Image 1 (tube, rainbow, N blue to C red):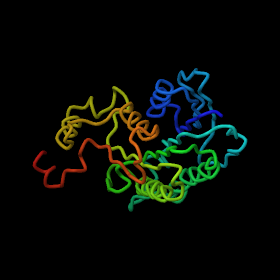
Image 2: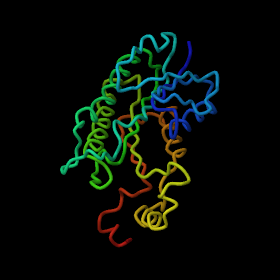
Image 3: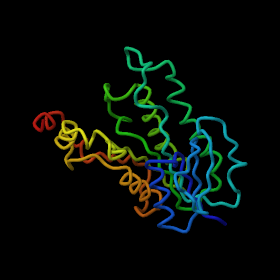
Length: 247
């Protein structure tokens, strides 16, 4: 029986760091599902690559080995981009329904397919955003906000449906430094604003988000389940008045 971790959206960024963590910390196999053709140096024999778009119908029975035991599913795919030039005056796009449902429905189809293959004490980790329960009108469309809120609701619901075999949690990051050219660190005004509005004084890097996902996925944190964990450097602890004093 092969122990396997599934990463949806593992071609780059957080997913790429996560694959490397799993390979370094375990002897398990990794199944990467991503619509990108690029594998970014994942040449290990323990990594299986599936080029697929999670928002489309996928024959998971033909893709997944019946002899595999799934130890974790890490879902990193956004339902849509935060910004969209087709947005209307109320903040949503003509593809509102598709943007909030296509990828989330793909997640549900995947969970249905792999449910019987989950190992005991396995984990599902869904990566959301702080915008799942907050509003940033200037930063993202309504489509993006609602898609993340739906993902967090799926996480809570599946906590009950998949118990007691599977622990289900959602990780909601705030600002993320995606590379060394990010304006969060290169633009003095933006970097200063981040320091003032975040108790820890900085945004997180992708590898830090990956480590948090892996800590939830590998069971190192024990029986934590049904939680949406905010990872924003403490920014959500500040009230509007607190921020006003800092600016």
